[in-house]
Amino acid sequence: MASDRCCIIALVVLTVAVVLAAGCSAVPQECAPEFSPGLHTGWMMETYESGTYNRTYEYYIPSSYHGSEAVPLLFSFHGAGTNPKRQITLSRFDALAEQEGFIAVFPEAIALDPADYPACAQYTSADPGVDIRWNSGSNWTLQYCAGIDDVGFVSAIIDWFEANYNIDESRVYATGMSSGAMFSYYAGVMLPGRFAGIAPVCSPMTLNILPGDLSPTTMIVVMGTADPELPYDGGARTYSTDDTIAMWVEADITETEPVETVWGPTGGDSTVVHRYIYDGGTGGTQVILFKVDGGGHTWPGGPPYGGTVTTHIDGSAMIWKHLPPEKYYLKVSSSPGGSVTTPSQKTSFYYPGGSTVVNLVATPDSGDWEFVNWTGDVSTIVDVNSTTTAITIIPNQDYEITADFRVK
Image (cartoon, rainbow, N blue to C red; front, side, top):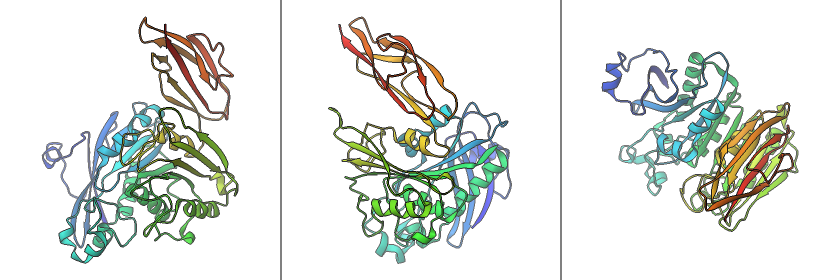
């Protein structure tokens, strides 16, 4: 693959007219990066025997970025037949990047016309979204038949960010949905040492990746047992989820018995989330499985994608928590009838160290509602019966609390 770096334009949609207006063209050159906060579009050119392609990737720069401190870089790969905008909506990693101060990148797969690749018809004719998919090294993808070097594309993006931004090279991560999940496994294997953590959602590992290909890396797998697209128990193209985990446990040399945490079910959500943590791996690596009983081809906490979505966890927040270095969190929510205005209803993250005091303010929606109390992990809340109080975050502990309201 030949990669020609080009302009970085502070727009969500990049057109030739905009490129020319900015004083840059699609020729071998490198333009100044865009440092302003928000969503931007990057542009590269790739030339193959099958043609030349203009590759784009959305990326989000948090408002806290000033270049004086190294920041993490997280890739989130979209699913088959979709695009970066849908992945942003699905994962909301742009909002998390703003909150946590990392740069989030959403690359776009190349769209190909199946009619141009008749030799690939036997592998791809029945697949939805076959024209837009990542080359994950499997011979049943159109992009594989066309020789699209998506691994090289991602490697070039990493190089560009490391050359133009202050990136913490020990904190580069890959995650993705469905076809993007398959590719995140593959990119991690093909670029050993470049990713500190990999977090595929809605796909076990593909069969073209062999156990001997793996090198110690933190692996976070999120899978629903009722996934209608890529079954939990595997199929003709993927290992089972359990086999995927077993291979990574062996590669990372972690403990063989996991620590389990369970969320659900509740009255409004029949899914049950089991988190299995295999700790103590080489270089501090972990293998983590989020097994969603009853979950479909969906991103936990995200919009419906294919089947049932669990609301017990926020998939993106849990991925960020477990990407190294491990973090601890405070998740704040409320029952109907009110909200938490301080620190707002979100998941906040903390790194190991001293205790942290967080102020809490719960506010009824109207005069028809009244605050009852704080529930959940409330042992360190000063006064669980007060709308205005505080909680002490003790190192190495997670907290989930809810402000409960009732009708007067």
